[in-house]
Image (cartoon, rainbow over all chains, first blue to last red; front, side):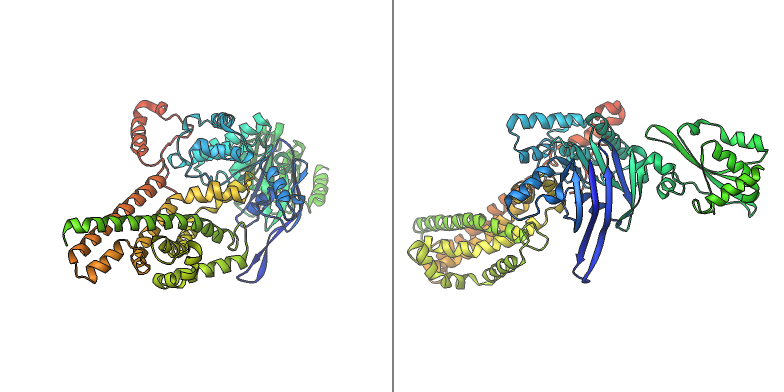
Length: 355
Length: 255
């Protein structure tokens, strides 16, 4: 639904006379009907990315395709015709903002009518559509209020209703919940999730809050210094050993209590989450297991979680129990050992241990 | 001088002043509003960025604004004759008054429009709006309270300028005060004109402030106590009293 290839954005910093690279060759692929979260710290380039998707910022190079339409090819030249095609395309892409950006001089209803005015929808039809959208976001009774009379969450609902006025297929959310308290954040995210399911809306959101990704995203990408360093569906990310995003989504902490201990991170997802693996492990090998930390949650309707456990003895002593955990279909990372590099050596040890 | 002698003089002078100031304010708004908006749009980072045009316009505005009015009036005489066919009288005074007020108002407009949150401009662009839509639906309506204050200030300044219009025989209150009050020692008449000017200026300032305030407090004024009542009633009646999806329906203090 949204595809960017080699997207690059360079800002010219006039005061220092050098260039700032905000986006450094970003390839993003958002499938139709999914909620896609881009997460990163401030300054990572998230905002530039989302603003390049509807060309509020023109990328320095690269292409943006939304719903099969190459936006970067539109409005390239000068003249009214070129700009007009881009504006028409933009009106099919909804956008919600961190600070709502509602017009204080207009009532809630008139704010929702604004994009319809731009689309040229007339009189009664416009009012009907606006009231219908307000009903959809649960604010039918606030139509005559001014934005200053609403709470933050209500303002964002108006922002969402306004973004939906052009019957968009794609909704861009620029930190839409960052100015809201946790409870309101949840209700706004729930609304976005419902809209995604009911209207088949594709949602691209950027955020710096892991909870947002955990609550509504099907897929996620991690941005650092203008690049996407990791991306994929949440399931895939969780199944990837050493995934930074998975670790950030389910942070587990806890230090080994001594030198002769082995710390193991276990990731549960899918069916394995329901199995009593820890007690099985304890009984089968007659070892004492301490749980250092654990995080369980529901992601996309499935139970997933991570647990950090401590086994007595060094890694070499625990090859067999770790092999047992792997056999159960769990993803096991041994702390202090590079996940991928030592995999071969590890499996060698497991085989030896089995003998 | 008796009151019966003063009355027709004052009446005529008051009308002259109001007429001159009224017409030139109208022209100043019609000319200054687009000029002020253009100054914002053509500035660096603006929607119609054009640094050369911006510099040229800015320089013209600066020069015209720093020119003492009485000199502007004299300097514009040939232009005035070209427009109105004469250089004396009320019509002749309107030309320099308007020309003096356009850059003044334009600068105030520029400041007011610059205050509009850029996020709103972006929101309208994201909806597919063009520059004209941004000006019409965002920049002007959102800065309207400030624009009204600016227009009020312009009217008051124009009343001050119009006192000098007597130099070109345009009449008006200022002219009366100088010709009768100062030159003929009719201090009674002078004080009456001062009184009338003070009243006129106060009324205009009050009306302008009132309009600006009631516009900028849209949706905040009378409804605030009602919402407070709602909140007070909420704990007693449960969440039924607050119909919205959000728990707190309090007006935010931001913006």
